[in-house]
Image 1 (cartoon, rainbow, N blue to C red):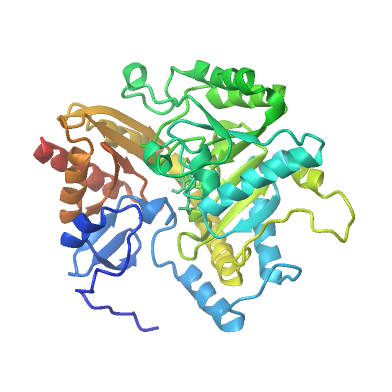
Image 2: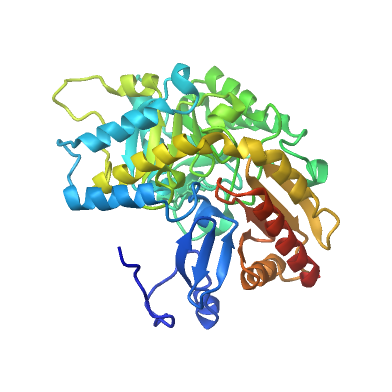
Length: 444
Ligand code: PLP
């Protein structure tokens, strides 16, 4: 098939860009035109190494023929079909495929799958399932959700309510929620390799909120097992286990938001597998289709699903769903993506690279303004001391510098986040570290 070519100098006025300083960007745009394997090509023909798997999603690398061909085939066979009171085989096939890889393995029973169109939709879906489940089992006063400071759960009203990033929250009204303390503790845990040693006691913050609100008002607690968007915040050793125990004690459901950690990022299929802690609901998106077609999925436990499959059989059990739930083209992309992950062992490849990745990242310790380095699986963060009176500008300068040198990284505040495609080679890890290191020296 012919490649599409666009003008190198598009009119920039009309696209209102998400999570972007539109005026700054449009004054000096960075435009990508093509992608293959580990690389983008920008509109001027420069190659850019993808240090972020797009936006934490292109886990198998770009331009995977198996996936693009499956999409083309599905598009020319059946472009769309509804899933409200109707079905099509590929949606069931994809759910069955996902169930075979479900978080926590067969024993966890997280194999009832609700399709959405994005991570934000997965989060709102999981919150609604949790509240509906509590009501269905006679716990209708449980409508409050507990999130965590610095949590990111997308941008729906549910997601921002349980999220803990002030910029995403301050302008908008929210649903009833409260927040546990975050677990970032650079003072005690700086330059930890892997999971930080200090902070398990922060899980007890859930007890504080139970004491404040009453367990009978709380439906669920949602956390990212590893927070990505806030700058790669890792759970202290034992923290998630403790959270599970407290939630169980009080009849509170536990939701893991695995939109980033799902599909191999930590070296196991899901963070649920990495930590051996089984939640009641798992939200996913991004890597589910390798980023090719928008899609998300919520994995629900059989306990939760069965709890809602009550009442007359001719009545809808959950008044919730999206036009694009189980979209056939997304399911085709997802099925092909899972096959690529299986054939190439990508759901566990990060575990093979994790120690080289860790050593490479930590070699940046000692460079100017670096106050912390964090890593797990194939995720990393380099936290910089902010410039006086101009927070965020130092990391932003490093980001622009890296892009000009042919490397895409991501910055949030003064934290550089790295999450390359899981097909990365060791030499490319070295390239990432050397380009970032040089940029850090220049930023000094
Ligand atoms: N939840 C987490 C943990 C995320 O990292 C993200 C996106 O980065 C989302 C939810 C929202 O996903 P989306 O942007 O697909 O709506």
